[in-house]
Image (tube, rainbow, N blue to C red; front, side):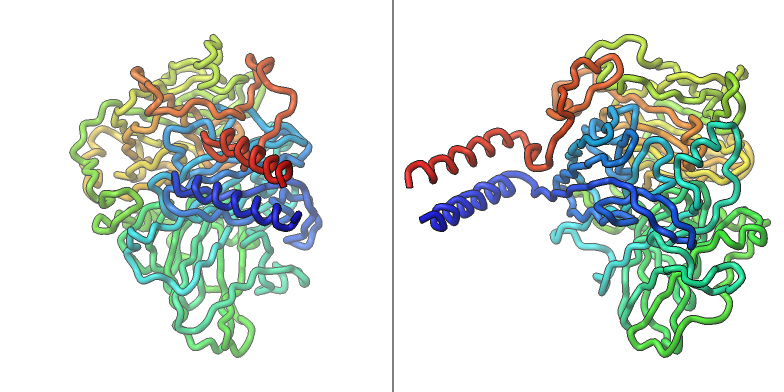
Length: 591
């Protein structure tokens, strides 16, 4: 009878779960335990941040419109937030995972993020956003698959391969953070990791013996989708596979026109998908290379990651020199031709119901223009700081929307200048006060000494132009007003500018930042506050039941800072749990 009761309970439980899933879009659940482990990617033992004991972390795999619940357990010795760049968090900046929107998860506590990947497809990654932690790991890939009713604009590949590349130091994030806090630059990285591993020993002088390297196993004649992400700290990397072409098909959730490249520059924070066909004769294995770009490459030779592409019928190991990188290091105008060539595939169906090209952004009137200048770090009040328009951002003690809802005064200012001002740089909490349903032009002017990537949470923007020199109003004459790529992270060449257009249809507070980690850490960011004055609950979600409180609202925080994915299933969660308990009690009472 006991077995019968349990079987009956399980049957009812499955039925209830199925009814909930069919009543709304499906859910996927993950438990993430972030902790320290010791690895030796360059032969030197060092402490890194693992997710569920793995470095890098596991893939988050979902389908368009799925709900994702990720219970994050902080087993580190410092505060933690996880962010999901490129996931637009429609109406739900409460889940964004940066200090302007969320209170941190304290050590030995947990928090469950719950968000919907609404109308999105493509390749993204997650990482910890606080305290320079990404420099020690904690990152992993996100794959959002298309629904079967929406075709992809290429033949379905024979396999899916994720490649995480990034510059890397043998010092952990706390040591690197201390270097920046002392007013010093980080200097040249110790190398490049590919999927958390050091380089194949292609050079006996540069690479010591015994290094564990990544091997990608493939079959001849098959075509694979390579999802490549630069999860590094600061270095732009050139990605190439010896003897193979890279057919570009997608960037950060948007299909591109299909173009072949022999190598491709991937800047910090960017994600691309390529189709690669295994069409070589496999006399040997092949090199997969990610090497530093826009630096003195002879000095930075060690900043090179090397993995192995291994055909199942390979006749021997890879040998000889690496495939050469682009030779345009002293001609960056030529290098800029690559990102300028990326175009939106306007004939492809996207995750949204309408074709991606149906949004004619080029004919929409711009409501506001913001010209943002980034400059080399300067000392402000004795500290080394980085600025946008002369302001080095200081994160508020109380997250911005929580401060709004609870009438916390003085938490931030809505006075971020729309152009650089001739004044002394300062540290402040200045936000961009944007207008809901506005259509803004943002000019990202890089007057720093390094290549930069800029990212905006909650949105994809149209990259309509880029060039060297100072942007002027006449620069608009060369904008791409028809098929500019949409993405969430764009490169801005040193001494140059990039122009983006953004349709402000996602209510909330959204982080706009330099993705290069050391500049971000030093204050090169702000937030765009987008509020619907006629809010009725339809354009912005209420704070989740498990919202964390801090700063001026610390007294509202319950003692047990914990939640789980299952208890946050949906608005029906309490009813669901009540039904389960009631049924369980009934089964065992009346049997």
